[in-house]
Length: 493
Image (cartoon, rainbow, N blue to C red; front, side, top):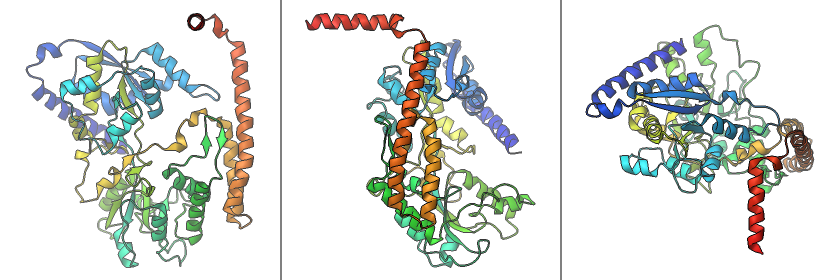
């Protein structure tokens, strides 16, 4: 049912853009009639056409798009995915590239992306309508030069139930609260009563155990527990100890709602029951940290339950908690689908038409009503019909989440083993058998040993694989490198 509505909305959107195209294309007929082909790199062909291709092809029928899907580069344990993607690009030669932040940063530093500044200047392309900090963030990844644009972002906010705050005499939440202040606010709600009858102050995530909550708090403050360049663990720093102490205090207070995994699926006899099972919609939690999907669920619940007096009625939004040292930034805003143009493309003009359109005002206006979990980076068309504080989703500037920086360089087996170790240590904290500081010190010692062992195993596996493959010194590229080194040595003499 939901998917049919999505398809219907897409068709309507295509028709609207078709009408716009008919109105705006006049006067450029001879130029627009030139046939051009364009290769676009995307993770999935079907998703591409649903999200971008149908609309663009209607507006630019003479640009024929071929999607090259990165699904043909499957993940494998121990495989160098960075190298695999680069080989895929070299083989397929796409004109337009959809890149992660790390891929964008790396390719821009290697001179493999097209500088968009000339197109932007020539077309007087508006960069002012993007959410605060978006353009600056992209430029930060590429030494101050703009090589790509991002049409959408994912973000979270704190939803809060105004009626519950008024009922219990608790001060309403504010934008840019610290984690400490948010958790203290949640603790002001009563903790008496059974799980089914009582009210909880806050829900964060689906399984808010000590490790996960501590990680959430620490990552929002720019912390990381591994230094990939030196394979060094840093989990027992004073900053991490403070983050986990904060999390432990909150969990002990009884103010946090923790999802029961046995009730997450099933147990609903009707659609009404399904909607009310969400603790925020059902009035069981005063605040919840979530993305845009919950907003759609709340609206759906209002329609379904409007005559029954059930479901949250009076609610609003504030920003997610921030690091007090950088109160205008958030690691919960994700810009991970950057569209850029290959530096060696022969179809730069057509590629720019595509990149500029899906990042432009018309595309944002037409697609802003689609409920796919993301928001357009051009925020002018975000729906605010209910008078909600929608700025909570985008008023904070995006910031790098150091937890995931270069994480692909860490052996995957380490993560699996370390996760088991953390569960063991933090269960001891929960049982009162050890302190946060002691648990983190043990994690540091044992975890570092695990990391070193897995790194050495991976290095040996790669060395063995290298021995089985042709010697790099026999390749033309290696010969050129050796010749260059000899020439350099001769010039030094």
